[in-house]
Length: 168
Image (tube, rainbow, N blue to C red; front, side, top):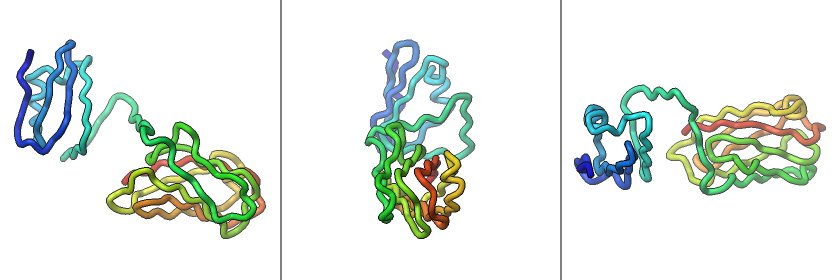
């Protein structure tokens, strides 16, 4: 079995799977040439991180960026008296998903998605209308470390659905 690549011990629980051999990386600074030379970069490799990672450079992927919702979908609430229900879809996460509201919007309504895990600072968010009702709602977005808030300006729209992406 291959020896682990190790450095200082701040990096926790990293496991690679290459050619059915598992390797542990216990380092907060990993030299990419060490990874290549130790066969962790093969097309059959999986590297699982259980802590934070910082990349000083560009990140390029030939695959998709997939964000699982291991904490379940975020909670969604509203201040509206005419929207009867709001929720995020089952596959939604803090980073991406859908927000559905049931009922009629009024100007001044707010729909708030509360993140499962707070961001270090207010994240950037892109919210787009997913149906015509959301398009007609004329809304703007604000964020905090804990929340994504959709502020609705134009009332009288039934059942708007929004899609969102959050990067923090």
